[in-house]
Length: 550
Image (cartoon, rainbow, N blue to C red; front, top):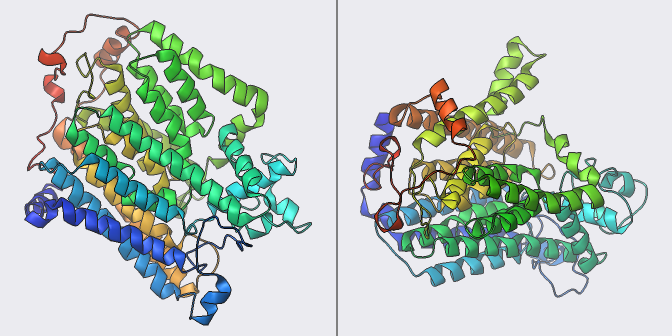
């Protein structure tokens, strides 16, 4: 591993690997590839949102009947490799751009932000690609408009009995699966159906807007949180709205991850202002998806030295959770449990489950789930030992005592540990790590996230279950997803363990645990570093930013 790091460092010494403008060009080209492929109309990788029927709303694409006259749709052997190349090029551009930032490059923040908004909006103006999840969002909203409960009734139960102008456009494999989303997500799906009427085309547009607008808000809040630090502001734009991996995974796929995260990110804005308001927003986040519990734990940990603020946070969070789950959608509280036990292709889990299945087939699946939970705690501990402390701009206390800094760092630790150890993990889940990661110092976690993201993104270019030939399934699904992507996920885990082992190999002793519990909910004196900055414990000083990271 050390030899690999040294080689990457030597490679990174070349000037073009820190050329920020070149990185931006790669990002733009990556997004344009996605936009062009989608604009060419329905294909094996591009969803068919149904006819526009005279609607002037996006998504815009060449109609099927027009495309047939000019030789469309393009072969899967053209569009799939094109997207593979485009995604990889974008990831390379992202790495080059942030290396340039770490080397001192400071582009204009507003221009970066506007470029990101432009690329994001353009991507949302064409049909979604490679994942039919957005069609299922529309289907769940349609069920609500028909007066049915999407937590109990599946779309297939309806369209198999009678024709429905919206449900007929859904795709496998989730047609027989009830909703697993929280009440706010369900409300957004209902609203999209109200605005879009009986046109799947228009409903998809409104669902895309409900993904894009929160995505833009997330970036704006992160930039404001980094106010006063040009490097962190640049990272905030680059890691969110100008991140080609997120534009691909979240926007091009029209996933609701941005809607899930936006309330949690807004809660960070209020951490230093009001624990109660912070609780309100983290409660709203939990009412979209329960996976935001990691941000809730991070906020509790940030306030852990002040029991009053912990109490205010809890009361604030219970208000939206109690109202939305307890009054409006109690069945949604347990809906997410249906997702437990799944194993996704391209994660670390298929290799382990298959290997164990040869000798202990009866316990292979359960053991994989248990290993995932154990790994969450182990990797979380390791990350807590190696991630540097760096006060979020505006801190008046040392980093280790500032509640916002603690919450941001803890969110990165918990969410990273979750996405890399969960047996069911997808590239759009990474948004919950990329956003807070922007406020930390540059470490090797940056490029590990990029590596993980590009592998999973490429793996799910062939993610749809319809339209592909057996040959493409063999290459795209087996070779790229089950071999290459799964191998990359194992490499990421190995790299994180190696980072811990060679940097700060410390284990939680009984004395450490006792000391930690004794400091809970006890407000002690917090000395300030000169100028209001952070004091660094000797064992937790940040790694040098230049010349040591690949």
